[in-house]
Image 1 (cartoon, helix red, strand yellow):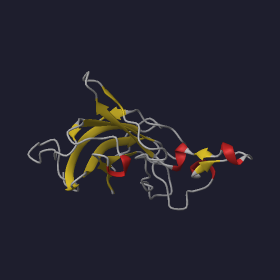
Image 2: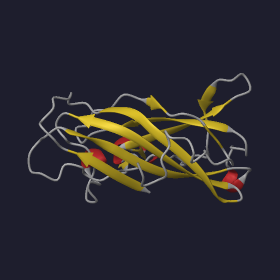
Image 3: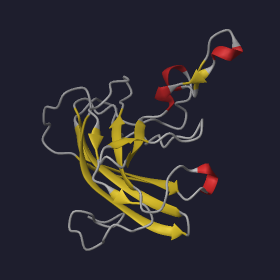
Amino acid sequence: MLSILISCFGEPEFPLEPEIEFAWIENSNTEATQDDVYLAIKFRDGDGDLGLGQMDTVGPYAPYEEDKLPEDTVKNKYHNNYFVTVLRKENDGVYRPVVFEANQDFNGRFPMLNNSDRERPLEGELRYGIVLYYDGTFESPLLKGDSVKFNIHIADRALNESNIITTEGVEIGSPKSKDDPNTPPPGGD
């Protein structure tokens, strides 16, 4: 699930590389061993070349990088433009990347945000939803009660990558309080 809010006003000057910052996070239990996690980031981009269209599946946006030898075929990072790494709090209190099954990641694509025919600065908020399974469901290494955070960054159409941000933590299997003023419900401000 992805929702986007964009604001345009007197042409501010932003760098050509996207810049992001953490906005809010919320999780909710939808099944016995499943959490829906909603993440929101604020973004700025100087030329507005953010987002990918449905037809952006060739060239730098192809699903795979291919060599002439089949065994050298690997996933193309830039088929996606929203990158997520799940971090789990370990016994020593440090958050470390979680290793999931091969081919499982939480990266995704968001649509083109600049609908005009010219480059222009963009600023707004991207909202992104993911499903986290736990307690062995689909061989997930996460357990109920685990504290997780997320490292997030995005890329523009020129393949410039943003800074990497880290979200606040949420506890798997325990919804983040809707009373927290810093975490509006999905679709709300």
